[in-house]
Structure formats: C-alpha cells, structure tokens
Image 1 (spheres, rainbow, N blue to C red):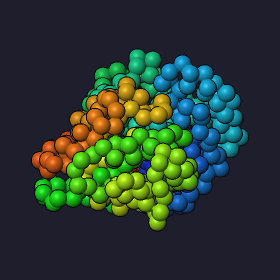
Image 2 (cartoon, rainbow, N blue to C red):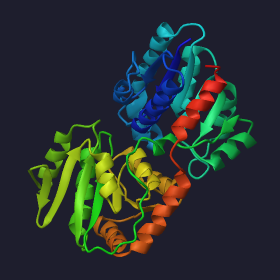
Image 3 (cartoon, rainbow, N blue to C red):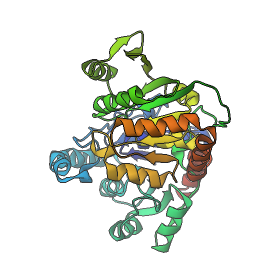
Image 4 (cartoon, rainbow, N blue to C red):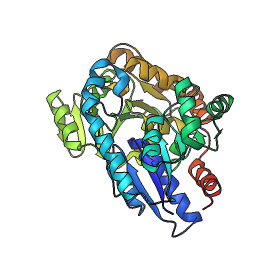
Length: 373
C-alpha cells in the first residue's frame, strides 16, 4: 500500500509536506508519494517525498470563481485536471490510499483517480468565512472517511451536517521558526513586512505595497519577503518601472529603503512588528505568530475586496482590511506603529484563532490510526 498526498496550492503543499514529514517520523519507510495539482512539488522534494506528478498553475491562480472572466480563462485548465486524474490512475495500485490537502474539488479528483474514499484536510473553507455549501456537505459524506477541519467551529459545523470531521490543529501554523510575538516596547523604529503573495500577480501587488510604504509617516524599517515560487526579477523590474531603484538587495526611493529578498520569510517575519500583506497562507502564518496584518485590494482574484474581507473574518480580526488607496492603508499602518497595545491586541486575536503549533503531527497521528498504517 502506498499513501498519496494531494495538494492544490502553495500553502496546501507546505501543509501536506509537513504532514508527510510527521508520517515518516511515526512510520519510517512508509511508502509515500505526492501529487500537487498546481505547484511544482518543491516542499515535498525538500522532505524526500517523491512527486511523480507535478501541476500547472491555472490562469486564475486557483481562484476561478472570483469573477466570470477568471472562470472563462480557466476553462482550458480542465484538460490539465483530466490529465492529472488519468496520470494518477496509471500510477495507483490496488490498496493505495490518499489524503487531499486543499478544497473539496481536489478530493473529488482523488475520488475519481483512486476509486475510493479518502481523507480530506479542509484548509480552504471555514465556518468563520466561506462555509461549506450543502452540496459540499453531501460530497464530503460520499467522498471522505474523515475530514480534518481548520478550526473547532468548522469541525462542529461539518459534524452537524453528517460529515465525520475533527479539529486537531491547523498545519499552516507549523514549520515556522518564529516565536509568538510579545510586543510591549515603545522603541522609536519599528519594522513593517510587505508580503506580495506567491502568485502571478505578485509583481503588481509589490508596486501597490511599495506605494503604501511611501505614505507611512512613522519612523520605520521596511522589508519585503518575496516568495520562492515567483521570479524575484519580475518584482525588481516592476519596482523599477514604478520609480524605485534596486541596489544591494534593497529597493530605494526618496528616503524609503526596503530590504528585498527571497527565501527569508521566517527571519523577516520574526523581525516584523506589522505586516502589510496581499498573500493567502503567508498572511495566516503571520497572524498565527501574533503579527497584526493589514490588507488591501490587490491585483488578482486572490485579493479582491470580498476575499480580503473573508480573510479578516477568518483571522478573527487579526487582519484589518482597509478600503481605499495607499494613503488610507498607510494611515492604519501608522496608527499600529504608534500603538504597542493595539499591535498586541490584534496579535493575540490571531494566535487565538489559528491555535497552537503541532497540528501536522496530530493530523499524521490520526491518519496512521484511520488508515491502519
């Protein structure tokens, strides 16, 4: 028997790879394979998990229902999904099991490929934001033997609708080398971290975030964590086109200097006092370690006003969505930089909503028991 880990997003791949690591700690030598739907599988490869299938990111970046245009642009991607199922079917052997980390659609693809029910890790929806629909409740009852919800409220909601669900922790909280914030100081200079996201629109998002930096009136240091999934050169070119200079790993304009690097998310997050983010999982990870997050409308389907409001609800108020332009966002950032007590209050909301670390290990333990590994 081989256990397959399916994922359909950058954060989902991160979470699935952490669960894979914990499974191997409990069952060394367990045959594991991964099949990311829309990512390259780098997180699995870094942990020694083979990825005979890697995915293609659709034009919408994985958010086809944001509007009619993104839905139409994603229609050709259906061919990729069909190919994904066919490829899995050729590789799957009788007795193989699967764990799908992501949304109900991914679990449906797994059900088609494996011709059996699987385990679902529900990172995409929550009772605090977009709830699972009645149709999804029906499908989860048919397609899954167990669902790991992303919070207690969602597990209870699924259970009320006949879905076997538990909450044992959110794996997005795991794997960070950042301690929870205990912000009580009044130092003159604070650090703001910019998160442009990991999707195709990251370069355009970066320009919007840099505009916010120009409008903040408080003494502050600035950093930008560029996602490894996207070429850092595209971000640098977009910044230069917007009037910034690039020198020595920094973006420079007027009196503002922004440290700009890939592969340093943990370190930059640890040093940050406030986060201004146009990301999905990275915003959640920032909130999980007690960093107040300010969000705005970005340039892609992941960062529409509706999705940012949803993220604000999802994070229990630890993220503050600001409508309007760069000056409006900068006003809120400046207020947070002036107020240690408000930073601390918002940080505690994020820690409370996302819960403690260790979710990946607990999920792995339940999978071992559920599948008889």
